Length: 179
Image (tube, rainbow, N blue to C red; front, top):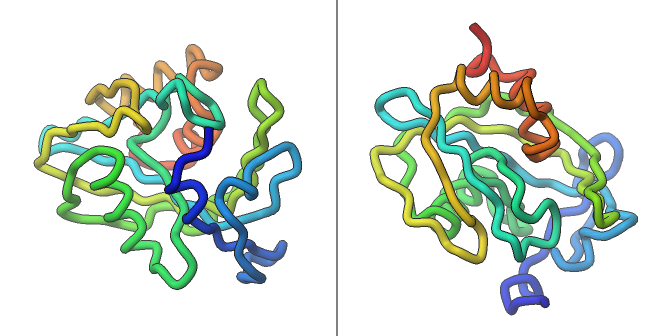
């Protein structure tokens, strides 16, 4: 079921070099033949150094019910990535971010879920901090937990199929998850 947000939101389409070439409705940009588009991921840490991991709502179009990074999203055309990160932190988790750092500027992945839905994204990855306790939007997040980066890394290593493919790939690249 499409929501008003899905119908109004657009994603930025990219060529293979990562240059914007147009826009498309978000609902049309995810399917079995998904065009490359701009997105972002964010890992949020609390003052104890724990990272927030979320379980995607069961109603999500792609990877429903899968554990993933704190949140992700798509910048709207003409919106900066930093503004989009702050917007989605508030929308998905009801939190304000204190500090945001670009950790993986050129992260890119393509993955297909069990329903044949494809994600094909240039997806810069951010690390952020907050002192807020999440109040998740149930349309986006089924549950959440704060864990140490080491515990998350061990869980991803032991059972990668329980996590989103982008989290598995990011955990391998981010220094946050290395000893």
